[in-house]
Length: 177
Ligand SMILES: [Ca+2]
Figure 1 (tube, rainbow, N blue to C red):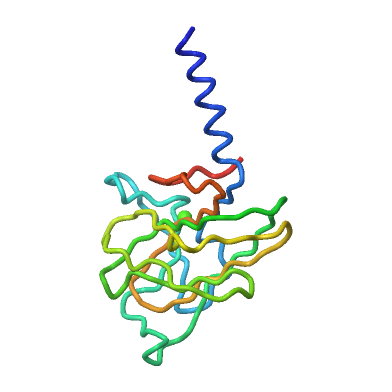
Figure 2 (cartoon, helix red, strand yellow):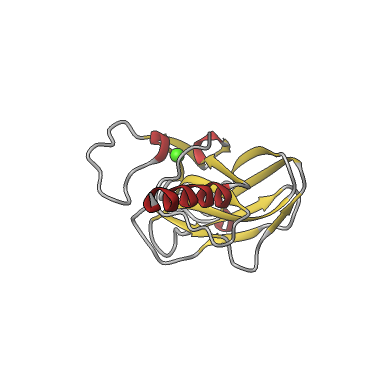
């Protein structure tokens, strides 16, 4: 009985902690080259850290010239609607090629853009958080989030906007009901 009570409390806590979150599949973007949408046809069997949500992700392929070096400046853009205002933290499930392919630029609406990534976890899918000093105060209504390429050899599977500062996504996030 005690175990059931604990379980009910745990489930309730999970629901509360996940309230105020928006999960976006990266491949739902409106993309402009060098961003492309990649579909994985044969995912099984896969090792931990290699599974891809929805069998699709977005990529700036290795070898795409950087905009800072004369390459194309492209984007991946998402539009989402918030029922109520909130202060959000941004996470992205990323796959980095190496130290020269581990970042992109992010912009919310018309707010100043910032560099996302630059961590040193390579060749595996992992969640990366926007710099801690960055939280995003968003009003109720429609917003856009735009990713711009700044390096090649990057992949993005999912994006998560969440008000809970303590929440840490681990593997593929389930699609919101
Ligand atoms: Ca995906």
